[in-house]
Every structure is written in structure tokens, then in C-alpha cells.
Length: 321
Image (cartoon, rainbow, N blue to C red):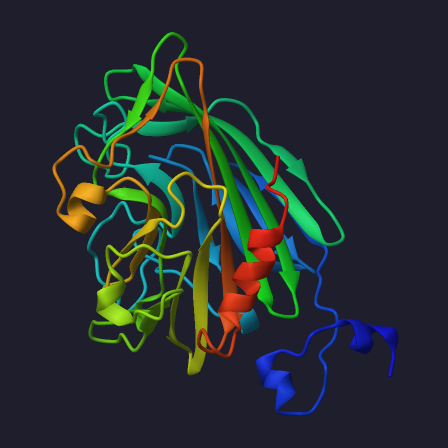
């Protein structure tokens, strides 16, 4: 047996064949195409980062194991059997519904926008690729509320595909920033319609690190949550990991039966029925707050994908710069 087979951990669909799997690290190449950055792994599209003329930057589409489409197409594209609710649920994104009172979550008439301020830094690699972008959070009236530096790292292992999302948020100079107590946020993905817990084509399930399942996971605290279900006849899933260095770890989860799946460390009033403002999080003048998450796209359910073990590996890693 070659060294490649000796060094790799067996993945579920190959375990049945009695083999140890091969090394599935992949060369990551990121190229610029107009208002987006295309991310490829070993020559195949993984995702695209959209940043031009949008309410906020987002990743769409996302192709998981075996080429499974992991997120809803609408409103970026039309596909059959998809609900047309929540047009601001654009595949995978970070935003919040109350930043010094300004809504950056929705796309309503009073909502602000997150605007990239300069060309993103891009790094390709044999095992990992990276996009680093600088953004400003701007109200409808044109006032800058905050800024952020967002770093997304793309990689793969025998277990599946990964996106590491690292964001540092700062108030504007001379002001503080309050990320307000609302369920409308924050680190989010809108999964494929067939993976949903409920709906006309939904056949999915939800489980968290505490063993809580399905609809009972909403508003609960957990280190991770996994949402899995069928896509094109195969069970696939996505887990979100809340890094232990994050403020208020383990976070609360705004995870819905209709396919919204978000980590939200701020919405305590909604999640725990505590007084309004309990979940307010203040970044003081001159300060900053950093949040980091890992998205794990895998085959099988949470048990088959060994989500708990993958989280332990992530939790032990040194936080990204």
C-alpha cells in the first residue's frame, strides 16, 4: 500500500469497500471574473465570491461532495421547487440586523449595505486558497457604521470540503459599535431546498453538539450544528463550527426548519425570552471583535461524517490571523 493510503483517514462511502481512502487535499485556484472571484479545487468549481453591486458579499453557488449543490439558488437564479421567501438569504454570508440600530441583514428600504472598499487579496495554494477583503458597513443615508476585514480560506480533506470564515469588526474612529439584540443574524447559510427539515421537497434533519435535534435546535446554545438531507438522491450535510475563542462561545443558533442556518451570538432576547437588549454586544471606541467559523460540507449524516471529531480538530487549531 502506498504512503498516500497509509496517511489518510477512511471516509464513509469508501469504508464499506474496506479501503483507507486517498489523500483528497486539492490545489485551490482563485481567479477574478468581473464582480466575483471564482474558487476552484483541482480544476472544479467549488464556489464564487460575489462582491460587486450587492447588498453584502456572499458565496454562491457552493458545490459539496460529489458536486452536490449545497445552497438554494433563488434569488440568484431560478430553479424548480424552490420557495421565494427571504430574498436576502443569499447562499452563504455574514451580516447582522442591528449595528448601531442599522439593519444590515435584510434588503428592505431602510437597510444598509456592506461594501468592499478595495480589491481583495487572493492567494492560491496546493492545499489551501484564501480571499481577504476589506469592507465598510454603510447606512442608507451614507454613514459608515463599521468596517471589517474578512478572510475566507478554502480547503479539502478526506472528510469533505471546508470554508474557514474569519472576520474582525471595528467601529468607525471615535465611536463605539453595538451589535444589537436580535435574532436577525449572523453567520449564515441558506441550504438546498431538499435538505430542509420541512417543506414540499424537504427531507432533512438537524442535530447539535448537545444531541438536540430538528426544530428543538432553534435558539439553543451549542458548539456546532449540522444540517443534513438529500440532494440528487444522496445524503449530504453542512456543519457550522463556532470556534471556542469566539465571544460568547458556545453561541446560539438561528436555525430554521425552512432552511435558514445561522450562528448568532447576539439574539438573547429572542432565543431565551430575556429582556430586550440583554444580548447587546458593544465594541468600544478603538476596539475590535473577531469571530471565526468553519463550514464543513460532507457526505452522510452527522454521525457518518464524524462531525464531533471534526469540530475537536478545528477547536484545537490556532486561530487564524
